[in-house]
Length: 125
Image (cartoon, rainbow, N blue to C red; front, side, top):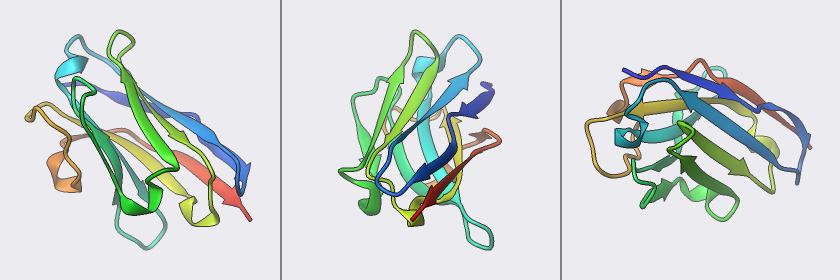
């Protein structure tokens, strides 16, 4: 079972960019489908983007398409979320998630058994 640690969150003005990282422990990182989710107070955690273990397929939530890009470096056991053209509505705690039961990308929260503790992203308008 991997353990996940997110980093890269912070404060940015609207229109700016941030890159989140999620570092995973373990030696079988390339077998894990990875996802990014986000949550604001009082709301459910929502899907943002996911990527297959090989990196060959990804799914994006419609509101982030064209602005966010997920990538992974399996040699470094790390998945990245590049966030451009940030909007105030992107403000949330961002969570990294992992699961090794699948070969493809999984765009649903219930598909993930391992979660990081989250990193806060604040976009000021």
